[in-house]
Image (cartoon, rainbow, N blue to C red; front, side, top):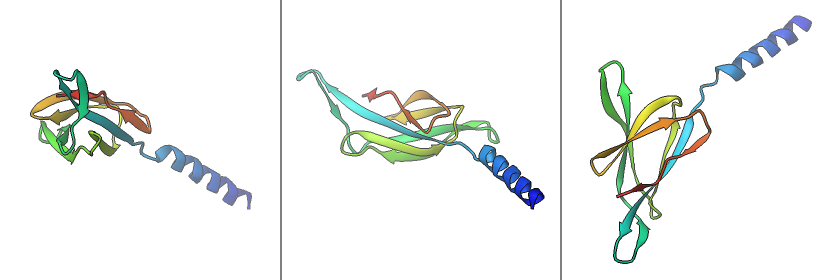
Length: 110
């Protein structure tokens, strides 16, 4: 009985540390109106998530989404501790993903 309990505790200990961590990303796209001096959300804009593929030695678009009515966009389950790029309207924005459950991306103004 003691061996079985020790083995079960050992397996539980291993499973806790073998879980792959992932980070959810959240960002916002806005537009500046110089006449009203206000910022407005940009809905329906394509946002691409780029990562470096070490097999092909190139940057590739791994995922894309569109902004919602509030200009918000989301990418889920991203591997942390790597450099990435967010592409919006043919412009790339560098991004480092930290080992956190949720990371806010700085607001992008176009």
